[in-house]
Length: 448
Ligand code: 9MR
Image (cartoon, rainbow, N blue to C red):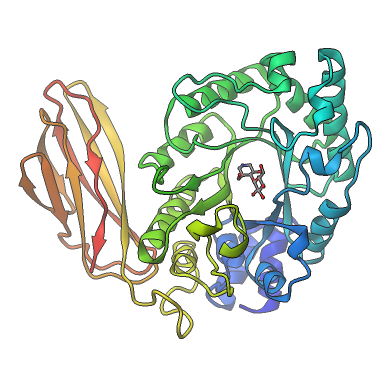
């Protein structure tokens, strides 16, 4: 991709050029060959977390500048970094990132204004009235300093507990100001920079569960009462204990249906090779399937500097080589897929992912659909398994060839085995519930 097209791509995601013009430019020139330009072709940004301390490293900065259209300061905008003493603001490190991003035409996500962690001790020692003043002053201080320069702010981060309760997490803000602190923070933020998108950001909210239900109910309440909120961030830190949820796309969609944008804000997936690549394909596919999913951010440029570096969760290895996960993301974004650079690890490894949706539902039955998406290489066939709850029976299946063994249905292609890298097909089926409304389990997809 030419430098001009790349800059156009960045300008468009920054809102300076209409997305349609950008798409035309990117397509007419040549297939996008960077994450940022390929995402721009889909009307999305593709960002990364950045640490100011690495901006002097040539490989780090070259990779950052070439590939990404948005940056999130990994730690530099947090409270401990920006207001270490009450009313004393320091923006040196954050400014370094914002200045770099602006000089490269990248967007900036602001992370984060009100969070229980990385909070200087003086905040925790304030009484309720002073704490409220300090919270609003902090929001005004940061948003005022960067007014007009931040496309989205994580106004409140991680305010809900893990586990099944859906309760608020204990923090100085929650404990002293009560549930209303979130609403107050968003109202203050809207006034401080009306042009910035205001996001609530959290983790373990990526699928439908008690925690995401609690966030969902809060957003629904905010929308119904006119509390200003524009987006919800899904951090998306995945590993073996916390895999990409099968209902990821549905969860993003239900939030979008409330009338907010959704963003994937801190994506990393521990693993390697084609399995990691397939998971990344799934995440990108989920975002692209939700029209209000406006962009994705991975939580770092290289595995070496990841907060989970031993899990090698990112798209570039320690030598800034593109990993199979990189090829998969680029292909899923519609960029130049196919064979990677000579010596690119994992070249030629075929993979696919299978994601399940219930597309219709009535009292005695439902229709299910499984979408098969090829990974970073073209495939000529795929196999997916669907395990049904014991009572349920399948009355018909289309766009696939099933064989059944007990509760497990193995489905292979009918006419639709051949898929380009990153391309999708789907098969559907009708199920008689026979008293069980439970969802089937879709197993891993295998490709050849
Ligand atoms: O990646 C960040 C790491 O460098 C910091 O030490 C850590 C401290 O809390 O925060 C990490 O970023 C977190 C982000 O700000 C909020 N969501 C979870 C991220 C990973 O811990």
